[in-house]
Amino acid sequence: MRGLPLTRRDTLKSLTAAGALLALGPLGCVGKRPVHFLHGVASGDPLQDRVILWTRVQPEDGKAVSVRWQVARDAGFEQVVAEGTAEAAHGTDFIVKVDAAGLEPGLPYFYRFISEEQHSPVGHTRTLPEGDVGSFKLAVMSCSHYAAGFFNVYKTVAEREDVDAVLHLGDYIYEYGMDGYGGPIGQEIGRIVEPDREILTLADYRARYGHYRLDADLQALHAAKPMIAIWDDHETANNTWKNGAQNHDEETEGPYRARAEASLKAYLEWLPIRENEDDPERIYRSFDIGNLARLIMLDTRRIGRDKQLSFEDDMPRRRWPFDVSEPEAPAALAEGEEPGTRPVEYFEVPFNMRTDPPTPVTDLAYAKTLNPEALPEGLAYLPDPERFKAELLNDESRSMLGAEQEAWAAAEIQSSAENGQTWQVLGQQVVMGRAPAADLMDVIDWSKMPEERRPFFEAVAWRAEHGLPFSLDSWDGYPPARARLYSQLIQHARNTLVLAGDTHNSWAFNLQDETGKAVSAEFACPSVTSPGIEYWVPGDPDAIAARYIPASPDLVWADTSHRGYTLVTLTPDAAEADWFFVSTVKARDFDVRRAKSFRVRTGLHRLEAV
Image 1 (tube, rainbow, N blue to C red):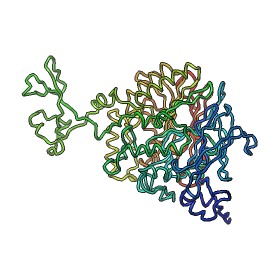
Image 2 (cartoon, rainbow, N blue to C red):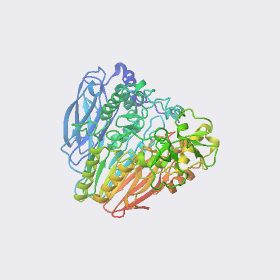
Image 3 (spheres, one colour):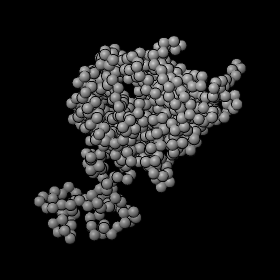
């Protein structure tokens, strides 16, 4: 079959924003001045009477331009119910965001922008309902690495007619260049991200968003549904925390704060999010879905998170008890010896690795002469996992949200319950359920694993043996902060539901506190494109997923090898999650299937298979 000829719009969508404008050449657009809506339209943060509308208007002469916006009840715009004007200018990257007010609750609307007699594509949005609500559907997604695959997930959600809103839980973009994470996949499938280097500056971040937003499937999603979004780390840099990031080196990349401010400005420009006028970095906020639910969007990433712990850098050394009755000559206690009334101090000492089990070097005077970085052969300091848990992991002062956001979340949970809303839904980035490290050594296909990766998995197996988390970036890295949140939920919430992204894989948890008291169900969505565990761990995906379940007291189900999204349906009686997987993200031809479903009934706080 002979291919259809490319239209001018097709040509533009295949180019970067700047390249597209150059490709237009002298043809321009018919009107007073040539302007272009290359990045489509979007809506977001719907309330009962308003919604954020978004577009980008690009005048060929690069000068500010006036833009008219309209909201109507019909696609032909014969019943316009709200309209106004705004300006697209260089200072905001020619982006227009308006808070279109005066709308009615729970209704669908059409919207568009007009500039210099040129019309944007028509978008479809919906306000949130009020009063009694029988059902509300959220398409929950995260982790959309452009180079890692085609946005087939966006395409399938855009085509669904039953989704009330899209919930994007972060990693809307990735900061890496083509020589970084995901780049080899992009080279393989011909999906090259721009800029092709790692992004650092405001111009870089704007260009990266602009490139993403030329994607037809992402444009279709934004045009079809209102989006409620929260950032995760890759909108700035990998493993971001309040004062830095793992993937940021101030010696070579400049001050972290400059990068953070650039990423913040670009995010607020390019996402249809309602900005906080008092503190633009405060993006935690809430949405009421009538009497049915309050959606409480948390920022577990930037505004209050303390720096992540590191097994490599923070693991304390094992200590040995010494009788210090004679301070000048401490005497080591034997293994298991009780000190009685003798004063005891613990000292970090190396161990003789030639014995089985290793034995401590008890000559303190000798031990103090040793260089920890160049110990004699046969000696080694041993890690102390119990001390790591007691002194560092369970440090009460460490926070995921920060004190201000913790107090805000507690107030939101309590007021929602007092107002009689059935569900208190936490939309946030990282997995909350306990996910200890799992020993995968005997399910890995070592014929497909580089030998240099073996020490990493041996270290993971050691963590599993000692009951340590797999990830210190998730809530597992902040147990006291999680306990404080659980306490609020147990005391004040009616029915909690936790939603998470970040891991690129699918999980279902029964959340419970340390005493075993039920707290909530947690639904964690797969990634849109970003590779999951199967990318790092070759082997039978079912066998690999099965290892995680017995390792966790909370985990009920896991899938570690598929891309997709989670459809969450809220009703007065239950919350149901359906995980939908696409067959591939490496080609545009794909299938979609519902892979798993769980339900949690009101008042039970426990998952049941559907």
